[in-house]
Amino acid sequence: MKINIKDITAEISELIFTVPASYFTFSPDEAIIRKDIQVKAKVEKVGREILIRGSVKTQLELECSRCLTHFLYSVAENFQTIFQPFSASRVSEEEVELAKEDLDIEFYKDDIIDLTNIVRDQILLSIPMIPICETQCQGLCPHCGQNLNQGKCSCSAEAIDPRWRKLQDFAKKKTIMN
Image (cartoon, rainbow, N blue to C red; front, side, top):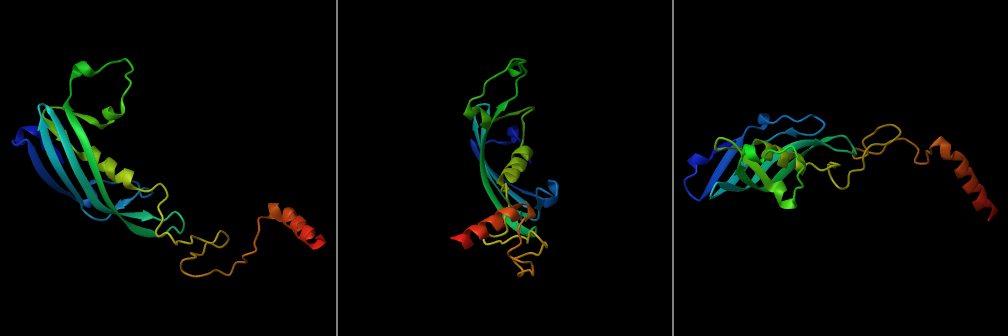
């Protein structure tokens, strides 16, 4: 996913990449890419700066946080990044405070722009913090581990943590007295 800026002759160019699903590997806890990654990018030259607006599309396999089943999750993310030539004179030992717009700036060396990290970041940022297979997911029974989406379990619904038993007994006595 490298772009040689010398190959970009027009002020605005459109590029399309198809990246094999095996190109990126994440830990199984994060995601498994199940579909080739489609990257579309509109590249705009402004002097030595390059503005890239693009999109990333793929499909991931995630694990539901409630019921632990695996499900497919579609990714369709847009990105915009400004690339500037890397200059050794910009490197400094001093602390530099960044403005919000500085976070969208990347640097390139030797007239080569590499989109690998941007695409990887877009995929990772699209993963929900708590992936859920469907909004109605009932999860697992906390006592026996039965997937409640596949059917009810035989556990008592009245099961209570033994540490709260005294409080439950107190509440029952109070309702009897009233």
